[in-house]
Image 1 (cartoon, helix red, strand yellow):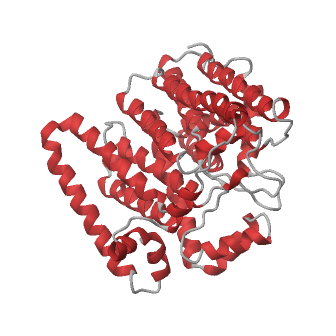
Image 2 (spheres, one colour):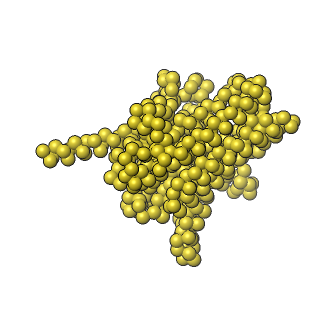
Length: 433
């Protein structure tokens, strides 16, 4: 009888683990199959709403309410910028704002599944799960990179048309493609955030992954390789990760940290030299020429510029009238699906959409979410990680439009759940703790 009970408990734990893994994968890496009307992330949103209706009910934490209240303000400004001030009906950014309301419900479901599959749940358990899911995404991408038949099959099912399919096949000749609707630079950002998470684990005494040092180091190395193969933007994230690690190490070890930092710098330089020497004249020379274009240009012309950096410079176009500066033009993309004003710069796309008023409120919302999370914990590492993500958000929008709503909702719900588990307060997981 006892064996049957133990077996049932193990089966339930495995079932929850599988469901949690699938849910977190869909949450972080939604797949837009071209034969489905909704991507897997949107399907998870629906499941999250149903979970909230049937299991959480009217209970919702006041901090999530505060996040949603500001999101409503952002949406009102967005609708005003398009329909009222500019008589335009570009709702592409409104759809992104709508995610502010949906991510918390999906996050509740994901966090609850992870909690049920873990013996001891904490914020650092979530970070470990993020790393594991990211590694699986990376393995899928690397299999696609080396198996062209698999690559063509998957691209054929995730591309939205022949033009996009052809473009992805051209890109796949020298960089990895993800099984996800995020690609290239945005995918590199996801790898970068997993790298930030891994570094944070190294300064926590609650991490199971960090206790297995070899697996921990291999995880960081693999995530870094996949990030570089996704987009050259990842080199900037490596630099930021290095600064983050150096800061945390200095806070812990003081002046002795410089020896560790010097060792890491030498290791990174050595790995770059080995990578360059192995790839330069190999069958993967196209990947080398693309990934290390900055190094090649520096060697030949003493310049760090790349084709992407030159194109980015050309995208810096500013409004030529006061109305656009203040209220925008109400357009995020053109009728052809191209970037409005042919600029991909995050700040400028926001400026052209809803002007300075909407832009300030939008980035204030990102700041407010970060502040809410930091106010929900006393853990210094968690706070530093959140502020690092916010700093990255400000930096990355110099290049592309990006927000961290995905992570803000997941982090906030996790901290609420952790507080609930510790307080053992019967049904008030999302209530007023």
